Length: 93
Image 1 (cartoon, rainbow, N blue to C red):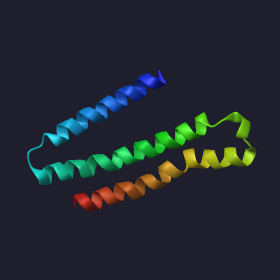
Image 2: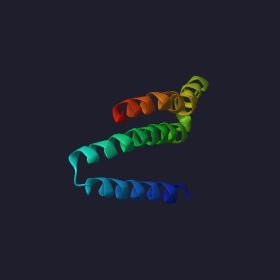
Image 3: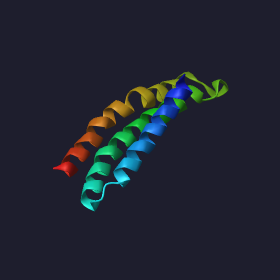
């Protein structure tokens, strides 16, 4: 189920990028990419930290490593999200 969701997400992003690349105006294409790319950065950060948290080998798991990985997975993406969104909003203005 998780793999199917991941494939659906990748296919959706490919369709979005293909649609954006078909926009004739360079300025409008840049505006569309500036809207899409921060969202893609957040999704990538969330998925990569989640994969790291769930796929690390159990043999190397110590309580301190588990704590750091949990913080990376649960705190960093939501904390960085407002920063990325504010950068996007400033560029769109």
